[in-house]
Image (cartoon, rainbow, N blue to C red; front, side):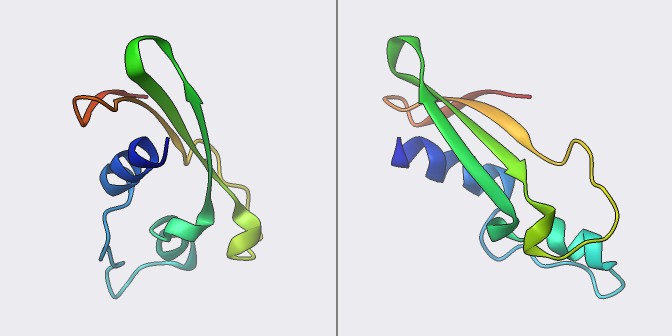
Length: 85
């Protein structure tokens, strides 16, 4: 599970990602790894499904944010991402 989450997170929000200087508070928040909750569940044949859900409370945003997360299908044995939605 941990390996699948780490692989998906590195694709979703690579370490060292920084907002551009003119970024809004929302744009800067969306680049923060800690602004996303993570859920993972095992699937068939060694596949793990990893989902990132945006938590606006982390950045105290006043406007709603829709569709800021992603779901990954990760082949843990092969160390690769099979699909992203």
